[in-house]
Length: 205
Image (tube, rainbow, N blue to C red; front, side, top):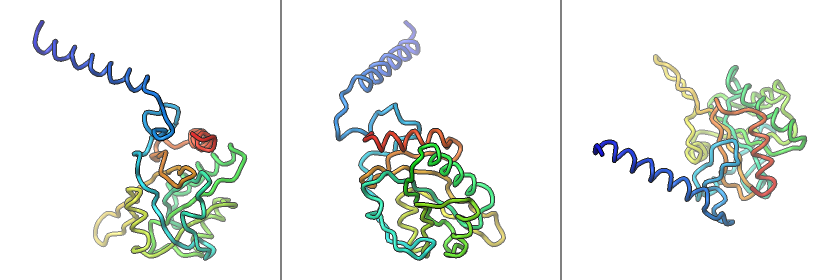
């Protein structure tokens, strides 16, 4: 057999064995985030510790990770003067919660601390019809940077004399321990997919 053909056969065989091993491997309580095919979004790397924070929301209320522990929660990153992607993401999340028919904590971290204020954050949420358990979390760059880093988020950056750097657009679902479990890039987010994954985690997935 030609050496290149032999190598291709060996590679295909190894891949098939690997896939079969993953499919047949037993799933214990500790490996629930590994190899699962029943989630709609992308699995976040296992073992990432919960990203703690202490910020104030649009009403000046102090919010920490401990406030949502014990519940499945949704995390996203917005800025209050955004007119395109942020409203779309917010409406996708709202649509998912409407489909679930129950309230879920939503933590929307500011990515433009120089511009976002309590007043502008409240106006954004009001304009989008976002009521209930929504928290638009505000602070200065030093307070928000650890959160951006924990989620791999690029904040909104306005550059003099050059193109602005748009912020990262993603939605992450936290499990009841506050761990990052499921992530949705902007182009893969739909209310149906997000609602399905929230429901799975609420059932103990």
